[in-house]
Length: 58
Image 1 (spheres, rainbow, N blue to C red):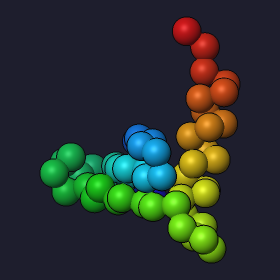
Image 2 (cartoon, helix red, strand yellow; image 1 turned 45 degrees about the vertical axis):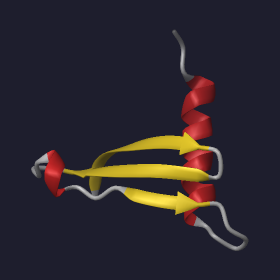
Image 3 (cartoon, helix red, strand yellow; image 1 turned 120 degrees about the vertical axis):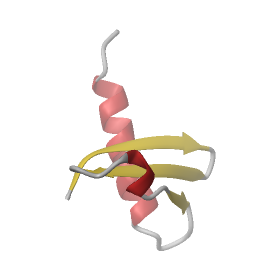
Image 4 (cartoon, rainbow, N blue to C red; image 1 turned 90 degrees about the vertical axis):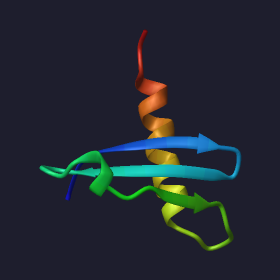
């Protein structure tokens, strides 16, 4: 299980970078997710990003 995940939205793409505990950054994948009909991963990560963004405070 990743210890944390970076999510970077770009239009209809999400760059998702899960960080695995105890592994160097170079050993962690970068996933490029596209918003396609029926796709679940984009929606789930996008919803998560929006929830965190909405609750963030300066």
